Length: 349
Image (tube, rainbow, N blue to C red; front, side, top):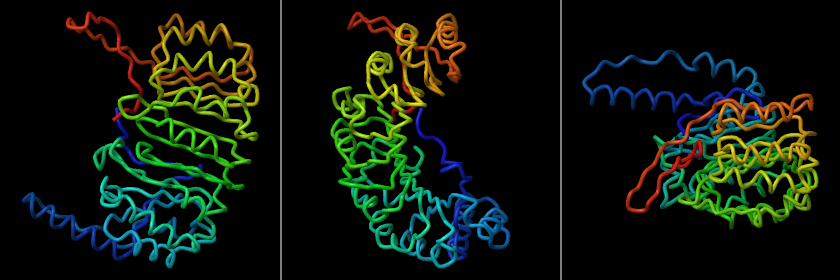
């Protein structure tokens, strides 16, 4: 599986696409040319602004604004700032910038964002690089150093980014950030060490998509040691180690980790949890019994083991999500004398 859809909700708000009147007209012309090339008919769009955008313009704080002009990002940002009251805009999603996320030159979007950052007066939540596999494979994205973005937005409380393969993020100090999400097909150990050594004293939610080794996902418990010990982020209450190739191996690590007793939410979803890891989870259930939520969805548990997990947490008050049960794929290779089931993360390429 890959990232096959754009965000529809961010920071608890529905995502609405921003289009300036210029962008609206330009997109209509593109559609006209596409229809002409295909030999099909063209239906002109309705009047500007469309209903969803008109509603958002009337109440800018009611939505997360998606900016996705892939030809003129800086001009698009300036139009957005001029047209929409920025004191009331709290959440922005940047995506669909196909040209700016090329592996050769990832910086145009970042430069544009840094230029307008002082004008984003109400911004508190930012998601960077909301792209799908149809636009670019997640392993091809090279975002470079993202620390300047956080430095330019000192009031930001939530930051999410997609595409961790060629990225760095060490933040010497950011007192406002409370939620950090790194999505990708493989989380490099180097990036993990940069993040956990950052000065984020008020970080409450950390979500890391560990991914697979084939796409750079070589993060180990040793790399996360400052988090697991509770020393890195003293305010941490929600930890996600998602989309992991070796979810089973993380269960005993978390059972023994000092930070676990502080958490109210533990998210091991989208990974490869099997009966082996679930057995370790059941045996160490007291270490997790204080949680409010334990998210295990997208797993490879047998029905019998799923029942054992439910029974282990019955009466504890833990909301255990065991939805989205997967079945391992059979794999045989005569050359390597290999005959076993294969388990896949939800997102790899």
